[in-house]
Length: 167
Image 1 (tube, one colour):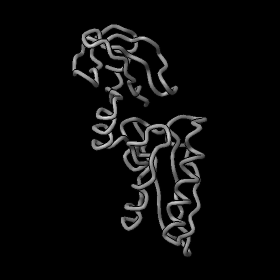
Image 2 (cartoon, one colour; image 1 turned 120 degrees about the horizontal axis):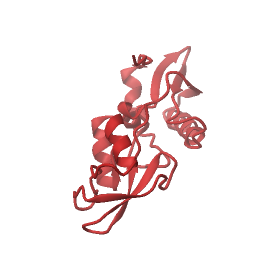
Image 3 (tube, helix red, strand yellow; image 1 turned 90 degrees about the vertical axis):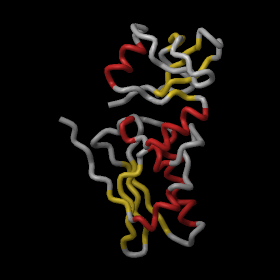
């Protein structure tokens, strides 16, 4: 049974939040990543709650500062806090975010069972972001960041990151 924190975001704040990008994957907004769980104006202060993609993610501090800065540009004061439970899941990445990942050269996460098969090298199911082939192999469990694995296409020989499925 999955328990998910209900996402409550004032729709008027979404255009500002969509301008804040993940510092490690600049083609994704924090809204596309699904890390924003709450955003509401309370007593003239924008309260924003974000969930880390994993415990200790160094990008969260930067995201918090970028959120405060984005609202300051709109002459709004913002406060950011972390919500640790429930834990973030790659299921929260939007479809637009998944497409942006692929276009950027990072294979989007597969489902939990498929992810395990790919990371154990049991199935060739991670699609190359350059040529689209699934004739790919795991090079390293860790890519450019801990949340990614490094793969290589055996057809076009290009290396690429795969965003691991997190549940």
